[in-house]
Length: 151
Length: 111
Image (cartoon, rainbow over all chains, first blue to last red; front, side, top):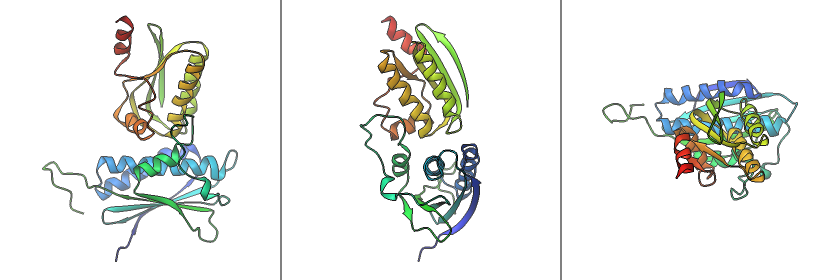
């Protein structure tokens, strides 16, 4: 039976200034697992976009709060659980938009679904606002001799 | 993110460097729109962009749309691998005019 084990939990203010720190932690976590650059770049982008959505839409302009990012791993599968404490959002309204409609904004959800294997809201526990989970089946980085790193 | 501006031929070249994220994209947007509102043709040099997210991409889309409104040219040059990847994911690599370098675009001008 598969079981995800927590690798790290990060609690940060929901502000744009914290996104660089977030990316550094996600990058370091994927490095520590032995993931290749492509898998790492995908997860860094997706987790950043998810947190941007929280800052922009869940909390919204002029409001602040906390975001908790949990990184869990199960063999070559990594899960990011992103929790906010804002009012519950209309999850049906959070979806990819038509890319033929060229306009600034609204790309974040599309990018997340492009680079992750699974993504979506899950029921929030008592006290939390919204919980968004994303899963990526990552590829191990190859060693110099071309073999995968041993996990 | 850092940025610099220079004029090359008929173009205002805006070079973005480093990470273009939600923190910095308002500055990138401001510089791009300022140049376009001053009726400059604009090339955005992305050769030293290490990371760009949807907020940075939104600034480029807004510039592209404003350029069309003013009948000006707007293009991207020297797009880094990291930036190209996000443009491709958003399918915007088929929308923006993309040139290998400023020199390449100027050469087209002379052909």
